[in-house]
Amino acid sequence: MHKEFLMGNEAIALGALAAGVNLVCGYPGTPSTEVLETVAKRRTEGTYVEWSVNEKCAMEVAAGAAYAGARTLVTMKQVGLNVASDPLMSLEYVGVKGGMVILVADDPGPISSQTEQDTRCFAAFSKLPCFDPSSGEEAYRMVQEAFELSEKYKTPVFLRPTTRVCHGYADVEVKDESEYSEHKAEGFVKDSKRWVIFPKLSYQAHINIEARNESLSKVFSSNELNVLTAGADNMPQEVGIAAGGISYTYVKEAEKKIGQLRTFKVSTPFPFPEEKAVEFLTGLSKVLVFEELDPVIERALIYVAGKYELPVKIYGKLTHHVQNSGENTRDSVLSAMREFVEGKTTEEGTDKTAPPELPVRPPVLCAGCPHRASFYAVKQAMKGKKTIFCGDIGCYTLGNAMPLDMVDTCLCMGAGLGIAQGVFRTEPDTSCFAFVGDSTFFASAIPGVVNAVYNRAEMTLIVLDNSTTAMTGHQPHPGTGQVMMGVKDPATYSDVTSCVDIEQVLKGIGVTVVETVNPLELETAVETVKRVSDKPGVKAIIFRSPCIALKGAVKPGNHVTVDEDTCIGCGKCIREIGCPALYMDQEKKKVCVDTSLCTGCGLCKSLCPVNAIGGAAR
Image (cartoon, rainbow, N blue to C red; front, side, top):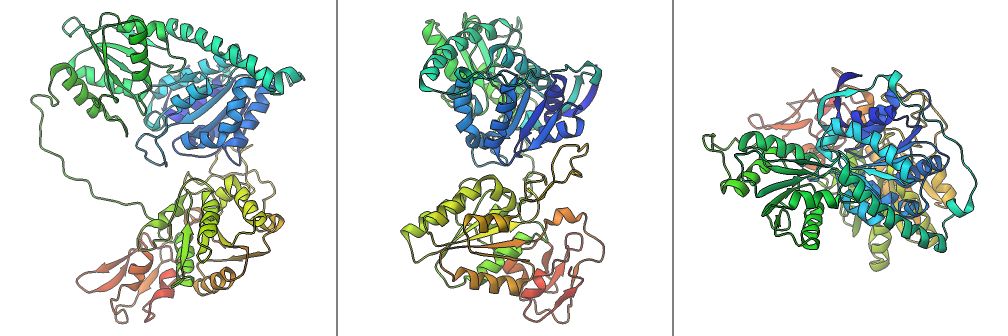
């Protein structure tokens, strides 16, 4: 054993490797992404790793390997679980042979997601055991325990860290590679009564699942995962605190200020450790519950108190003693505990002066981002026409911000195609555009294109091809031809396979009009949009230009310049594209260039009415 300073996601990855994981697959999504990347970097010889095309594919690949007896880990964020839910719901009835852990990282806030959905609720819905770590150190141990439980009970198991567990750092004691478990898959054994799902078999499987979960509730009540801690002698003995996940860590921090209360740490929210909950609640008059996101523990304790006729009141999100959305923090937990126990919210003797407001830094497309040019080209081409611009999930969602204002809808990955078709059916006089990134095209947009072609819709698909999965950290995808296997440093992606060509895919589907253009060649891009969008049926434009981050750091001298004598200070370049590298000198009333940001893309040169912008555009 040795200690390493690790991010929570890194600890989870090393825990899986220590457990002898044979296969790891997933789809990138913050806050889960680093788990798979760490496995790729630190994997042993017997571990296969891949970025799958989407979460559904990843779930099915992991299930297939688990059918053959392999230990498998599948990774995603909470909204990715929606994509994977179809195979998941049936997989619980079929079961697995090798241990299968489903890592779903929840995102309270949300910090980088569309929703605040709670995977613990999905665990109950799918009837799967769920582990909820309170720290990176605990997550390292839990993932190993999850594999063991999965194999023992022949079921997939959820591991549900939240953002602060995933991205927090700590010293973690980890096994040396020589101490890793070695797991050899037995191989797939044909048995249609086990591996082929039929209604009659599902009925019996459901009976078995309910019995198993009752048993697991007792198991979780007797093991060391769920912890009861007695209160200090000088603290009220009738008051209790229940918590799970990172909120439990905040509770322990708060107790350093107000004293140790009787606490119940819930590490397995499903099946709920009912017997241990009864032990905790007995003798208490009131309990305050801390958790992210839904009141899962709170509702379970209310149920237990009612079932066993315990005279205790449960407080938390449902009673508004704890906020019912967003993240908990050390300070919010301390304040709520202090008010609950002492009837006051601030600590005496502290400085009550409010800290200064932090500067507002709204998210913005990077300087030189080709998506800015793509949006602007479409906007110019469609000026004056009744048009809807249906967006998608990715960096290009930022096209909704002023001054571009080019994202009218954003629902989920790939949904822009369906939204555009629905609007067309309702308002046939509207020119309907759907924007999708290259990674998302492969992940979830292709069926939408097939639907449009098959049902003879009228729409223009814009594929924003920047040669990477940019928003989640520049992972590869089928269009890059780069894979994870053999890669000790995921930043290099040295293994290369055949690229899947977007243009050929579209033509194979039946899109007859497919054109590819560089969006930074603005005049050509605008003309292409005008011409293609006027054609009937489903047509597509691929705007192809690499993400500026792939080009590395801004190079000295490779930036545009502004001729002050020529510049008339109209601000059109700033007003119309919103590039963060351009700003107005308020004294001189001239446009200036931040050379630390400018990449020399040259888009602003195309806008200047007096040709005042020049220099080394690439």
